[in-house]
Image 1: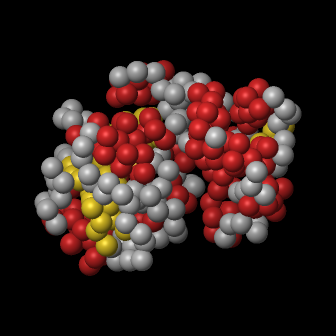
Image 2 (image 1 turned 180 degrees about the vertical axis):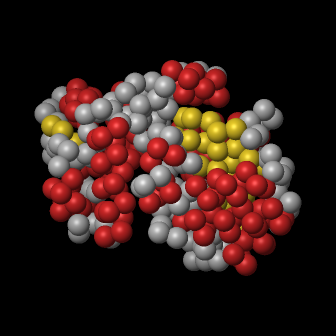
Length: 295
């Protein structure tokens, strides 16, 4: 069995690669020219935005795990991948979507995935969509600010069912390798609904020092990240955070049951994620980074 991973160096993709490696399955990893090879993988040089390069990457591939890039042209990248996989006879595609994506279709990086979902459905039954909530691992880029006493992600008061990327990857690996997941959208959610203040409180308890929630002011957030993010991405994320503040992104009982079923266990919680970051030393190391380098 040959598995191609597109997006294998990101937060979820690298966990999928690790999960496949743990099973003795070294995947083929799509890498742009010039990117260094990743141990435990076969390298396929190509780019989702360069459709001709994907033919060779997909040659001889049975299954594809697809993560599309956060980019204004994300739709084109996804459609290129689906078309190349179909032309190469790839029998199973597992795509990384978003939890409750239809409700957030006004958000650009939600909307850009919808045509890819439609193309997958048109391609036949051999597709699965993993639909994760907001990642715990997004906080890693914020550890400097957290260490300075502020949790800056403007999640709002209603709360999200945030999830660990390791659980997302575990579900993706099952969908790639096992039968019974074709033609399904699988929600991947965490076990608790967490608002911005609750996340700050979890970090405060773990660190033993004050951590305050920065609040919901999106104008202030935009100004803080202006040196770090391009305008199109600030606009996109502002709409996303506005959606979180107005509606939340809480899982239903059915979503949580589906997550437990695909994992075969309860999903990881935020306290466990923070404890793992402390145990590995990653949290202590990240807390030393300059706050100005945090998004």
